[in-house]
Image (cartoon, rainbow, N blue to C red; front, side, top):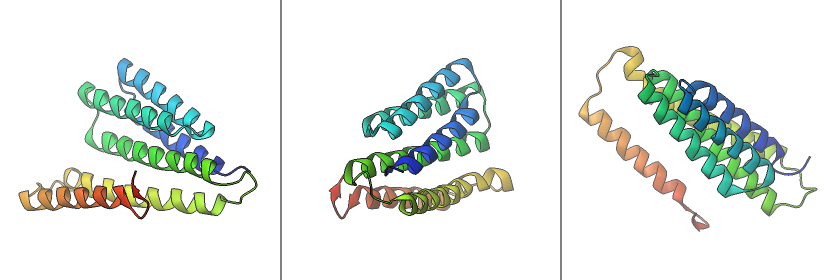
Length: 164
């Protein structure tokens, strides 16, 4: 199996989940379908830019679905699926570009996909917990979540290899 194949399949699966959850109206369905195609083709063909554009299309589907009246848990789950699809899809393209075609990378791909899913699931759970548990968000909690998101984004952007 070529490097990146398992990750590309996982990214496509996550994009399908996002498509199903966000496609509540005609425009959201079209945007989600175009995004799904972009992520799948980009991940399997090794085109990182296409994975990003596809993820943006699916994000547009989530926004459109929210305007159309989709519920918060549905939108948060769709957003989490898009994050997983983008991250794992980009990993698939990077592995394809960096490794020889005979390299064994399935374990790395599976570990990355599982870790990304776990972190995203935890973040989505924290984001949706106040609405499910019927607890009002406090300004301190919202501020801490915002600071944590900024720190996580900065940490992901400033890797050992430099900015992405």
